[in-house]
Image (cartoon, rainbow, N blue to C red; front, side, top):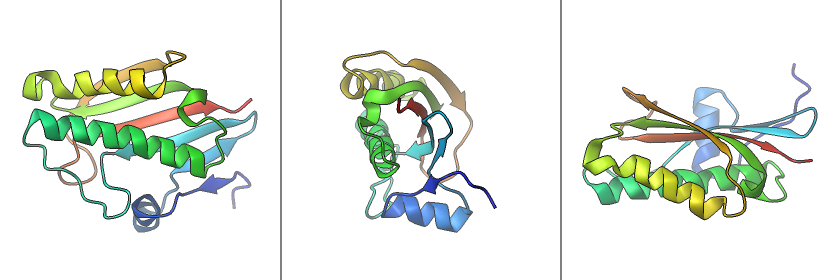
Length: 144
């Protein structure tokens, strides 16, 4: 059994963790928080906006950024995105809807990290775990 402190926020993220047997966050020695990939689902219902327009893509990415913040806070982060130093964005169809997912990722970083610029890796993938999911944002944060 692991001695690392794992956590899940309440709501849909916890349901996903229970269903797939994983945790949404883990705190490592040295006060590093690792947050599993968060999609653009509604945190209460689990609804994912259908990826049929640029607006829906923008909504999914914006919701994924907010879901990351929810998980950070539930894991005890004092500043949420303010402590994030690394971001990995997994995007389906980076060029779809005139690059809406890339644009939304940039806007998410500007909104949630106004005082700093974390390192970013953005990767186009063929698909993600849940039907209709077009974005997954994974982060690491330092809580020192």
